Figure 1 (cartoon, rainbow, N blue to C red):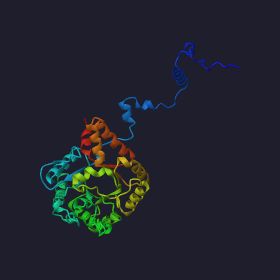
Figure 2: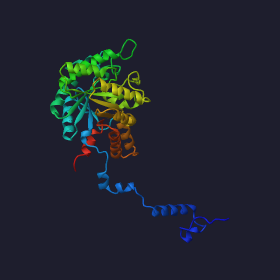
Figure 3: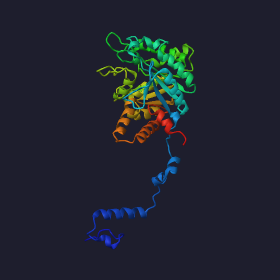
Length: 363
């Protein structure tokens, strides 16, 4: 028995064999859509800017960001070639900059020293010297921006000639326990100068417990610890190392004996949860954009506030692509930061902090 093709719902002229088969598909799909009431049309919630704003799940504000600030001993602002728009600042200019960040609505600045070679030593003695330019700068910044949360890096890489985050043992590896003892003293010194959050970025075992014990014993119970808990051995730190002068000339620094292997997400969660148990007040994932899976997973595991660091390489690659005309700088910036917040970050350290705060000012 011969059956006619099932085209009875189509207009007679559409049965003509001269029509392209795709036309039959298009007509049938259109007929199917018209014959049924779709219960869910997501485009209704994307119709115009007002609707999209009303249903927006994630929004950015200046209060989301902490701005890294690089402090050098003296001299005029020194632009950092690998970090467009960012400069090394002397203490006076750094204090002025932090006052401007506060005026723009930012709530935090992360301070990093640019230590000249003359102050570097294998034992990182300058890290514990209250008379150095950086420690004096903390006082000036505290006075200029009293409402700004000051986050201070607790690590030895700016103070050592080899650029590692601690002092070395006889084998050339970082001596974990000697380093932790120095870091604890360093945090106490910084707290006495007026910082709000001590931020150990070294990835030594046991450093959070040691810092908490030392801070409390010195009476700094109000000083919080922002732990660099899930800090990966990333290739994206190069511009930062240029900025602080910890880059080893002609040779890459291998920090894989203490920073986390990029392949190990579960290990990163274990590290972070141990920091929580040791007394950290906030946990950080670094880098941010490449490890959104870790950030989202950690958000499910803890009730502590989470920070994420959009590192120098992430910032630099967006700028580089924009300079080539391959990306829209502002749209790529905004999308990258929205993704970090959507994944679970409460605080985002980013070199875009100042430009984002300016862009988010009321019109």
